Length: 326
Ligand code: UDP
Image 1 (cartoon, rainbow, N blue to C red):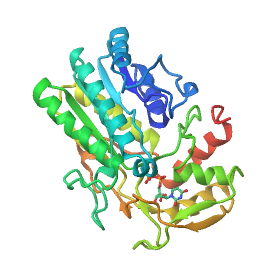
Image 2: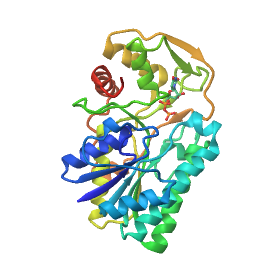
Image 3: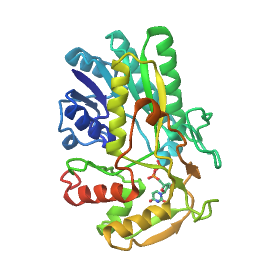
Image 4: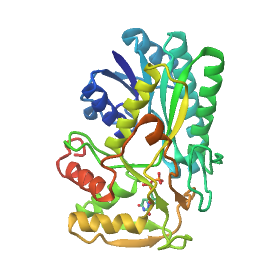
């Protein structure tokens, strides 16, 4: 059975392709290679195309007739969204609209959608569950919230059934070190810390130490990419079993500050990462921690690898052997 993976050349999408192939599906990657890597597409065919170009997504449906879609393709950097909100609305919202219209036209009515905890915005000390009101504070979160709403409208009118996953911070790499996290430019904390350990950067800048948290730095909930893609297989099965549309938060419920992450990386790699204190980064929420057990209770999702040490260990192993980082 073919499953279309938009963004399959990216960090999370490529791990999803591997998990799908292992589960017996053929993952067909649809990617414009703007932030993804051709060499990360190892588990099924690649269709090069851009979701903002409707004819290219139409071709992918004609050529492959996928049974379902896992929709990862999006721009996802808060700093970039603050500088270029129009780019985020055009790419993430128009791209999703083209995808959903094409899927409906081809009778492909099961979609797993990558959303984000950034749809919740800044909510003080609240643990974020699926009932928490969404008040995004940047164009990235707002564009994802808009697509969530679009899915509801497409279900009402066309029967497009969907599982929405709101990711917290995804980390780690394939335990076999075949694929991992790599962006150019790199903006994410753990890869930046590991680049610094590897001597590719002089230091890590900590974006703000005056937040109202235990050590003054922002808190995030980190989930291992292998656990995250396991949830996607469960989400796909949920839809193929005919269960109703549902949104799930994917986090572990444990919060780690920027300084906690750096401390853990120091221990795992047995080095001391040099740090500088910088200004707060625009658009950053103080604390994003998942308070939900819905994915565990209903999807029967069990995060197995999401300890900070394991995530850094797997990311570090891949970092040292990765060929497409060169
Ligand atoms: N961060 C940092 N220095 C960096 C990169 C990130 O202090 O060089 C902080 C960032 O402000 C946030 C946390 O690390 O509080 C996680 O950031 P990341 O970009 O990895 O993910 P985000 O939470 O933005 O999705």
